Image 1: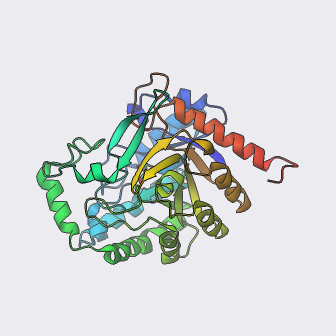
Image 2: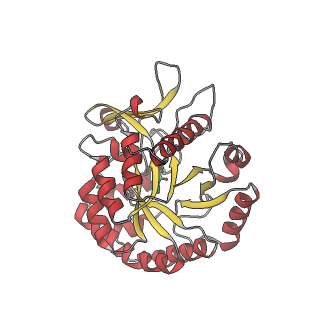
Image 3: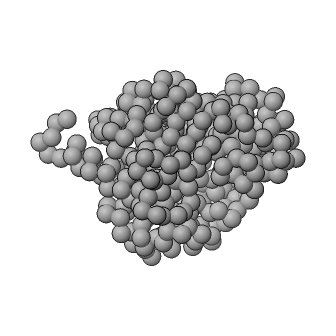
Length: 350
Ligand code: DNO
């Protein structure tokens, strides 16, 4: 297991040097944030990013993410060119020795919350989701009212996209995903890159859009679409853990048995009602995710890939990018390593 930490590049208020000071963190998870979706990533920008990370004594361990253009998810004719571009970006990251690529296949919206600063009893703030609150969000003027999505889409663009998805049901989305994987996975394999799809967060349809990477059976179906170690998953405990029907340990044991977990996102959540949850500190006893059990399942299946603490709360007066402050994620990183050290130490047979 390699402990990593997400860094948003030059605009991240957290300097790389601070990441390097978190005990045991050796890898950085990052991306290019100024390339238009669908364009190939320029080799020189990628090289600059990698050398900045190297200069801080860290390793560029994971690209998270190269976004998949909506036209690919919609199965539009432009997808051929877009998939070629995607392959080119994969080749370039492979050439630089970055071994893992995290991406997702969620229509229009990536991870979604309805409150980015829910106050917990200890005064910290956390990210929260409530399906009823989501239903009250008005998208007719674009993403302005959706927490964290301020200027992402204006009204007409968003309405056009939502309209286009009306003719894409879950099965069609699966077909479009299979089409994409058949093109990119062989390229990833040759480039020495392991792909790792991120589950849908939250793991159910939102705004009437199909979401398919939501459960154990879905992940099993996913890895069967293209049978290659380069076609794996980012196992995100917080995303999948938001649905109490998901048996996370069974899912890890099954995917891990076939070496299909290529990246771990570790985060805890508390589910307080049907499709209502909020994020909590990482340790097991604060939420519904059995983090110790997760580590044991990973150890038992021989997991040796990158792991990162996912979202943290805002604590100690920190202000920053929601979910991506320094302090609580750093505590998560050391906690996770503590668990790992405990269960992998000689003589401990947990
Ligand atoms: C949220 C992240 C996701 C993830 C993408 C991968 O905090 O885990 O935004 O990066 O879904 O494409």
